[in-house]
Image (tube, rainbow, N blue to C red):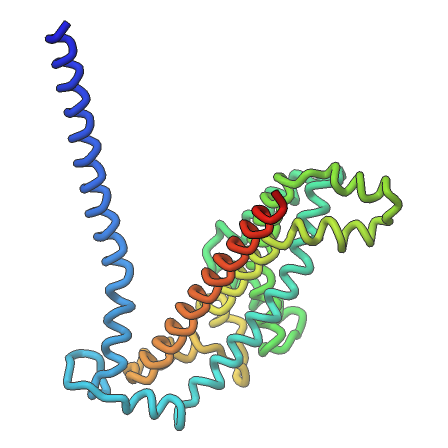
Length: 286
């Protein structure tokens, strides 16, 4: 009996050692992956303080490029164009994508399966093909290239992502809540705004953030449909690569990274506050 207990203890300790070794290797792998991802960003931030017009070597610390960015740089105008196009694309893609997802989820009609499967085409095909196709469409329709051509192009490749995200959100919704609302006397419009829309908010926010990220980050499709009087920040940076990037670009991207980090921290703080209030209300209720 004692021998059996010793054998069991040995097997248990061996499993614990394997588990601990697996955790250690998992931590090492995670650190390696995040290091590989964030080292380029760290280098960009570091060289935004470099006292050198080129980013080939470190020459000393300076804040000159931030001063130049906030006083003389024209990158802010291109950033404004990017934001205008991104926000407009988000609004249009949400308006079309949310209604499209509701139609695909709740109604049966001909060609439903074909339409549902065709949503993946803009996601799967290369962006170069989609960019050329949109450019040909605008040329045939004599549609001027500029703000609206970029907005329509960005809306085109954002809509499939919105529909897919919203369909996933609607799949987990309880339709009986809407039925109960209408049984109690509310019409469809009231039910949509007071019952359905609040339940769709998480999916709408996820779709909005995804569409905004795709729009403001796009280079290839925007390069085909942009006009001479409306250029986004990524296209401007791409054109500057040919003559050499100035550290003001690093300064601009560093400012954007800082704003993003502050936004994430603020979001975490708001969520923690809401969770704390929910727990407080729950305790006071009981």
